[in-house]
Amino acid sequence: MRRILVAAMAGLVAGLLWGGMPSTAVAADLSGRWVSDSLRDNRIGYYLVLRPANEGATDYIGHLRFERQDGSRDRRLPVAVTVMGDRVVITARQGRFDRSGRTISARLDGSGILVLTNCLERLQQVMSWDLASDCTLRRQP
Image (cartoon, rainbow, N blue to C red; front, top):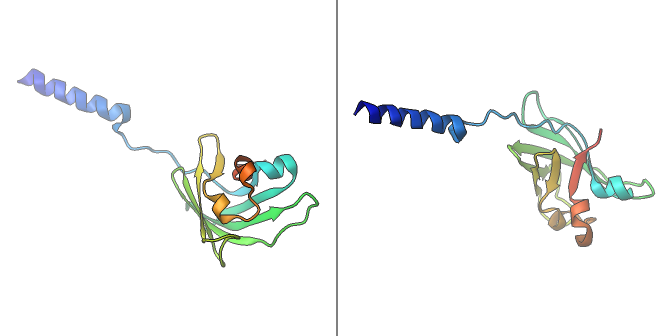
């Protein structure tokens, strides 16, 4: 009986050590300027500027803006951003996005790229033929 109890305890400890322990990962800092691949590569696209909403939080405020090749820009759209692990929710603080709705869903991948998952439905300047480039944002150094 003692042998069974020791084996059960060893199995429990091993399970906790190899995957049962809660993650201690800290949410990534999204402060700064995020630029779409299309803006970086073709000088036309969206960018997002963020700063912490309050100290130590995973919430950010800032604005989303579209820039054209000639350097002209659409009006700033104030946004609030909430980070929940690798999920990110971008909410229009005043009004709504170009096409419809007040929220854009996004995910932060392991290499620090912010992928806007429903941007085609929300942003007027996004082209379906260039979706990956228009909806992928990288932090600008």
